[in-house]
Structures are given as C-alpha cells and as structure tokens.
Length: 310
Length: 130
Image (cartoon, rainbow over all chains, first blue to last red):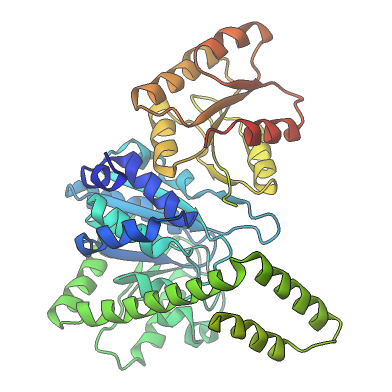
C-alpha cells in the first residue's frame, strides 16, 4: 500500500514518514503533496508563540487536553532551534507533553528549524497539510522561542496565540513593532508571578490603540497550575468565529498561501543554484574573492543570478 | 545530508537524568536531532513518541535496575507495531552478565558507564537502518 493510502487510513507511521520526507526534501515528495493537497483545508491551525521559557509547550499541553475532551483529533508541530554550527538540535517540547504520548488521538511532531529563521522550519506548511489529511481537526503550531521579529507563524496559523510572561520589560516593549502585533489572542502566563497584572495592563493599553475590528483578548493564565486555560480556549474559539462571521477566513488563508507559494519559489531558486556542484564551487570562489575585497557581493549576486537563465 | 534523529528517553521510575542529558548533548554536537522526552516514561509513551517522530534510533538510559523488565518490553512493543527500521540501544548501570540475554531479546547494543560518547555516536552512525 502506498504511503498516501496509508495516511488516508489514519496510519500514524505513514504520517510520520511523510513528514520526514518533507523535512529531508526527498525526491518525489512534491508529487505526493500535490496529490493530498486537495483533501486538506479542514483543520483549524492555532499558532503558539512567545519568548523562550514562557511556557508555550506546557500551555499547548493543557490546551490540547481541553480539545481532546471534546473528542477532537489534534496534531501538534513543535519547532526548536537547530545549531548553526553542527546542524544538530535538542527537541525538548515533548518533555512538557508527556501524557499526550499515551493518547492515540494526538499526533506530536518535533522539528528542528534547520536554518530557517522566522520561528518555524521550511517543512511546517507541508507538515500541516499532512496532519490535516491524517485527520487532525485542530493543529497546534508551536514556534521556537521568539525574540522580537519572528512573525512567520501568523502566516501559517488561523489564530495566533501570543504567550507573554511578566518581567520582560516595560510598556515600551509592548508598543514595539514585530511580534507584539501578530497576536490574535494574548495569554499572560505564570500569572501568579509579580507583575503579571501590570504586564496585562500594558498590553491592554497597547491593544486599545489598534483600529482593527478584532480586539485581541488578553487573559491571565497559569499553564503549570492549569488555571484559566478554559478561558484561553474560549478566546481562541471566539477569534475563529470572528473570522468566519466576517468572511475573513478565506481572505486570511489567501494571504497565507501567497507567502507559502513565494517561499516555495525561493526554495526552488536556491536549490537550483546550490543543488549543482559547479554552482557551489562558483559560490565558494566568489565568497573567497569578496572576503578579501577582490570582488563585491553585488556583482557576485548578479553573476549567480545569470546561472538561473541557463 | 539529512540529520539522524534519535529519541532519548528514561523509562520507568528513576529520577536520574544527568547521563541522558550528557548523551543528548553529545548527539546534538554530532549533528543529530535529539528528541528528548524526559523522565519517567512508560514503554507505551516511548514507542509512540518514536513512531510519531520517525526516529532512526531509540536510546534509553536506565539506572534503576529494571532493565530486565523494561528493555524487552520496549523491543516487543516495537515488534508489535511492525517497526523494524528503528535501532534500539540502551545505556546505564547494567551488569555485564545481563547484557547477552538483553541483546537476544531485541536490544541492539548496551553502553555501560565510562563509555566515551564518541563510541555511542559512531555506533549509531554505523548501525542505523535507513
């Protein structure tokens, strides 16, 4: 039986293997993705993002359990950073989701970012499609711990949950551009810590200035103590309803798909250039020359672009 | 080249994870993707995680003395699930005398205290099945 048939039958090993093939860019994977893509689109994707150690994995664990109570099949994609030196990584998000490993209605996949910088990995979009076709009704997409500008998750998720914790900075941080703008729903985690209410107030003030018709709710939660997670879940569902009622669901997805297509094009161009031995040699040679100021990077990039015309 | 994926787990009731963390770190530095699952894993949790993560290798660390029970159970569950392409290795305080029978019951290799991490790394690189 083919991998795709097995995937459609709900075979977890087929699902896992297909995701690996995407991650490793195995020959022929695009053909498989083309085949399953028309069957996808049913899953609702919830992005979970926030700084390192803010409790994204623990929060995901608690949210997944709530969705599981309703019998919904859930997928989780958890991305952790890859070493820029060795290519290795420690993928540790499962440590906070141990109970879920016993639940056959939950499929968790950890991914190394593998050099991708926006908070996700190259393979996440396709992995979402695969989990969707596998039958997951909700897919949680947990980013690497983010800093200030890793906003990519909003392009893959229908609802983005921004997880904040108290004590990371003052109200100037709250009004900065970047990740503070992408939350559809805010969760202030570790709400029992000093300053949690103040953090909530600062974020509330920042959001009150927004002129968008959706005002993101800000909720104090404690993932570890399992407090207020039900409120957070309601916040997420309200945002989902808002998208549907205002017919934004498809507009948002169109924008998301646009950036997915673009990134596939960029990936293809990159592969075309560095996929060939001789091109790699040229790139090496050009880099060497630029480093010792025998050439400049602008001419070098033009030389490389010439390769594409061949 | 694709990175080798390894699940590092601690089965059973044993709270000492220093060794597991040292191994996880060493494998990371060898360019592998290490899925670290933490303490007190059941056999079911380990096998399920390994399947979902599509790993090349399961490396369990066990210091509790329960290796005779837990290690064969992991090997059996893998077999039951029809998994034949995951390399299953173990490390920890395991008496020499117990090793041959554990190998007969499905553990590919066992690394006892004092093994240089490079030995484990090379073993994984040479023995993964795909």
